[in-house]
Amino acid sequence: MSTTPSRRAAVLGHPVAHSLSPVLHTAAYRALGLDGWDYGVHDVTEDTLAGFLEDVDRDPARAWAGLSLTMPLKQVVIPLLDHVDPLAEAVGAVNTVLFTAVGGAVTTTGTNTDVHGIVAALREGLGAGSGAGVGAGAGARPVAEAVVLGGGATAASALAALAELGCPSARVFVRSLDRIGPLRAAVARMGVTPSFEVFDDTATTSALVTADAVVSTTPKYAADTWAKLLTDGDRGAAPRGVLLDVVYDPRPTALQSAWTALGARAVGGERMLLHQAAEQVRLMTGHVAPLSAMDEALRAALAVPA
Image (cartoon, rainbow, N blue to C red; front, side, top):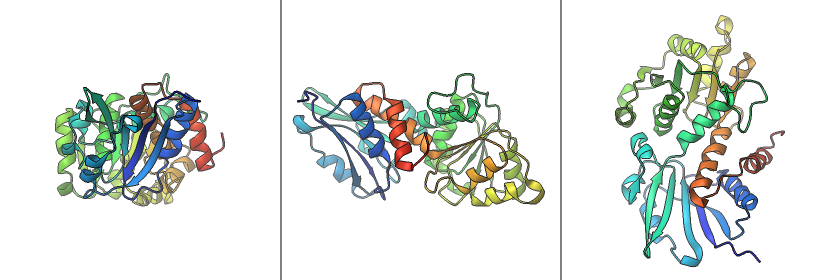
């Protein structure tokens, strides 16, 4: 019989039933021999998040290790936490909540593993070679020019990730400059220096083709316009850089398909998901995440050939 203490973790969001986080975390627990751990799914809205955190079961026999947060909770959770780490505070988004018991009390700390996930996923793509996968990235190509599509919370994480890869001055394309106040505030906190531009057929397409790295943070189908423009008529110049499209449903996206059809390398959002979950596992369990086991479980869930 296992002597592993019982711990629990879960993913919260709305909607959240489609989440692949349980697949990844459960695979990690099995590989690590954490038999007393389980990982659940809770549909929680912005309005019910505070109540959920207040009602968390803190029974020592079934103590909470942490929570994974997806949309729309990454920003609204911040004022509800005891502590927020510097990166999450600068980015303005928390996707991981850690529970720590100290002297009989439990405190909450918000962290951000999305930045780690984006960096690792881009390094897979920049590591060269169609076989790049888990652990790829040694000797990766430098990122001098980068583009981010979209202006939400994930865009802030993308800018932090690109800065870590050596490009603090990405071009950010958005639908409206009037709706990116939170992103501008995050940029000021992070000390990065992106430019902000409104989507434009010619300028955006040109930027996509010449960038060393592109991160699309737009919702599914929102980037289909650029997929069509990239492959339409005489616009079909091959992009020189790697694309990370954070969307993984549908998979591949139209933008990914257009990118690879032109001979360039694209990385799907499931790679970001894998790496951000691996960092969550490390933070919640204290063990190095079993990345290969998690990757195998993800590929099986998505029916991706090994």
